[in-house]
Length: 196
Image: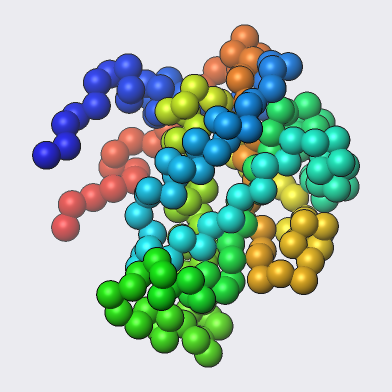
């Protein structure tokens, strides 16, 4: 049976973790990013669909491709971050279901059903993006997830001719903690939830 995480783990993953806009000038090793993917892929997706795809933009060439598609407010901080992850969705994820979900013909659930494909890919790649954030925090990285970019432009620059479409972006690195603003308020339980 799973055990309750200790306070330190809860603080690192949720309670003291913050969204960062500024990062230290410290590279993130590729091996750590590989470990990150190996962790996040273990999070649940419907039918083990695993539609998330991840492009770790770290090179000057990659950042130059990304830069013109960022909103003005996200441009400088993304160019300064050690890593910007493009969290994408593979709209042909179902072609791998015979391998990923072998005990039934799950591929047939999607063939010829573009709305079902799009909904499943978006929902589950969003989940996988959230797993990426938590896995990154667990590995000692800080995160700056964001919208504020031209999806079509990013798709043209990074995924042209493929079935991949961008979902959202997340800067990664070692956060500049003194640069953080005070934490914004959070809603109460009653604002967010109820029992039925």
